[in-house]
Length: 390
Image 1 (cartoon, rainbow, N blue to C red):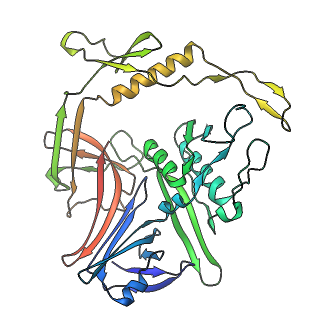
Image 2: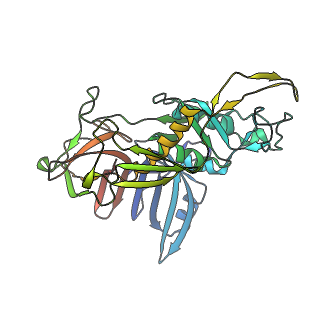
Image 3: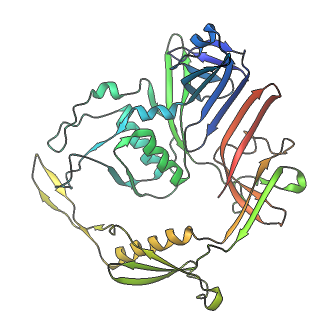
């Protein structure tokens, strides 16, 4: 592993080749991390002090070293990729003029963007182009110019999926966006695009979605790990109906409605009928109706929302779907990619891609490549992905 530190302007500085062990992990929807074990010398303490940037040849990801610990003549240093630093900034937005009685600083909800666009929009407004809150609706006395992350801009942004209603809460920025990315199956990255001694450096924030490499599509070549080809090892397979439910009775304000896991199939009866009771929490999301214009605090448009039968049914259906999704017929495979695997990471598949795993019984399961790990110790170097069943 070709590790080296970077200056504050992300230029190469010191090579790190005298280590006992090193692990470098990059992840899809959350920040990656690194751990180095090196001799506890004064030189190493200085080279790998907290706040130092660490790079690895062959990747644009950068780690920020955060913790040193020394014991028995060895120093362990740990850090994380740059997205984790976004927790040093907060997500907070001013109250829209449509919410008359809301606090001045509130959670931010948007229903006009796709998930990848929404995350990028939040990053842009918080740490790339923050706009001071100085209107009558919200005032936040921050050092707005200093909230920017220098030389950061948006890179490629994922535009797949559907426009949906998304919310990021007030709080640490990374915590908010990583939860949305995980929930929506998106990748996020804050990486070093370039660094030059004369022209400076450039950081990029990007959202992306892994490619579908399963048999459900024909655009990308199929990637299927099968035991007969020694491409997957240490196989674990499970099939269970112990928690399976196919009927949900949803209780809401004294009324019970019934919902089925597979509405297009015959209604389950007898021993095939497995019932779940669900308490619906919250309130349905109303639809926008014709607005009236009012002038207040410099002007504004008040939007009115109406909850009708369609909105109520969608609210109840969603509660049923969420509950039934947590009570599936379990058919899952897990395993590890073999060293003699015919598929090469970075060529045949990459971080975030969805591939197939075939078990010993012939069961085929989808799995996502959630992280890629590089490690080196006295036993040599290893590189391998982590795959998680979907």
